Length: 336
Ligand code: 13P
Image 1 (tube, rainbow, N blue to C red):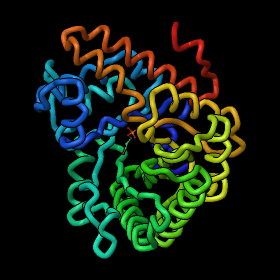
Image 2: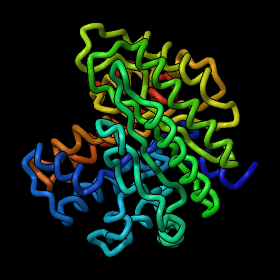
Image 3: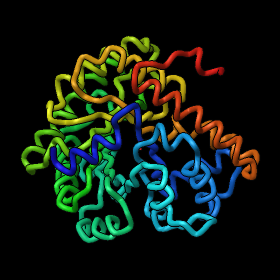
């Protein structure tokens, strides 16, 4: 078993998943302003430190993805954030892409930047304690998108990123996110997501990436958020499994889904059914941002001094996600 494979398995095995707390300052500002909190470095740290010191980190969270600002911050007790995360047994990770920019000659679409100077930045992040990384490619669905340009160029970037990350002895999370924005059907999402993921693996293989030392972070197969044709959670799980079974090479140890704008319960319910119906050898877990933090953020924003209540809210959510990652969740547990 390679060292990279061991790291990947440590993050996602035994019902553990990933806390995606790597919102850029721009995104975090939107999240904080939505709950009437000023987006200062101190407030961003205070919320995140509250989550990272929660009891549930030990049992349910195998890795935390950080943003550059956070990996360089220290807690109010003077401990570095990566040390705080490691002390709970989880691994610190880092978002290393520089964000999605308009794609030339297909300007409604995006290409993720950040390859220049990446090797040097990776070295620095490793020294700070990071053992895995994240890069997100983002795609839109419409009758003509995602275009071949977007599919090919983002796959190429994800592969070059992954090769550099493995060279730096860290596990790359490969995140091709097909957005749920739009009125498209779930079948179109299935078709387009499958195309996107297959192209990513073509490029990863071409770039000699060790597939046993990556984690795939895809979207679930859903109908568009403006579609009148919603499908059931059972269908979400069937279509998601169909997509992954047909497009992910068997060497990949695990898949950690993004929540992508689903509510906490929706994302949990879907993940649970994916695991109950899982007819693959892949570990299927969570790498949620909003679906792990939404309620905790709301509670914290009302009284940031009430650390206990914020942590209680987060602990509950992390536990529910972990149960879903084992196919053991039930709606009854939500109100306990
Ligand atoms: P959401 O779960 O809120 O989609 O965030 C996950 C993530 O890391 C997006 O890049």
